[in-house]
Amino acid sequence: MSYIAELIQQFGLIIVFVNVFLEQLGLPIPAYPTLVIAGALISPEQFSFPVLLLTAVVAAVIADTFWYFAGLKYGNKVLSKLCKISLSPDACVAQSQSLFLKFGSPALLICKFIPGFASISSALAGSTGTKLIVFLIMDSLGAALWAGSALWLGSLFSNAIDELMNVLIEMGKWGMLLVLLALFAFIASKWWERQRFLKDLRMARISVEELNTLLTNGETPIILDTRAPHLVEDGWIPGAQFITMDTLDKLTFKADNNEAVILYCSCPNEVTAAKIAKALMTRGYYNVRPLAGGIDAWRDAGYNIENLK
Image (tube, rainbow, N blue to C red; front, side):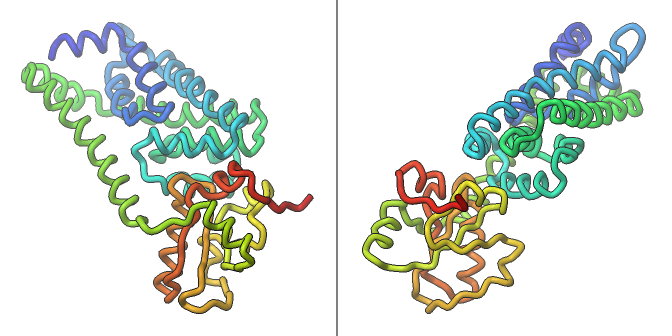
């Protein structure tokens, strides 16, 4: 284990940069513990606080800028890709959208303290048209707050961290195994959390082809658009009513318990639509199905879209 401590001391800046960069790209490799340990090593002989902070901020901003331009180019479709590589539950997209839309670019100041929010907030900044200079300023400040807090904690509790490192060093290969087990346990817990969440929202979907057939045959199922208000501007399925989790209690429509109710959104695994569908089922509406693929699948299939133009 001693060679690991030496590695951190010799290549600490590289390790900090790579760890922060990979985490901000969305991989389940937490960088906060690394920053805390790096903070404990701050000394005139090893690392200085400004250099460590600058390294972490540059790594974070480079990764976040990648997602910013991805959001700028591909819009909300990039959010689906983000949740596919992330082990955070897909609800992070809906929650992050809500938080970002409520606070705007200042949300970038706190996004790195919320698991699963950093990459998504960067993509949202791009997809909602946040100016690049504003994004870079806010993201840099947010990265500085996040990394600075970890480095400060590390320096504050450096004695305790040194003792822990010494214990791991004395344990040799068992210390390495303990660290690897801790990382494995973290990743496994996130994976289990995601699987449990998806299982809770498992229900029958309706395909865009089936919905189009219903409309073509003159049937009029109740169609509910569950997207955030700013996403509706891109167009909606003809005849859709608009609803969010916040306005669910105010929803009123005339429907028999067996009348078809179709819900759609633009989030991975139809998360928002499925959550609202579950809520409607508790109210006695049993013929409720989310639209597989949401509005994106409907649009990609070339079916009719209504908008304000």
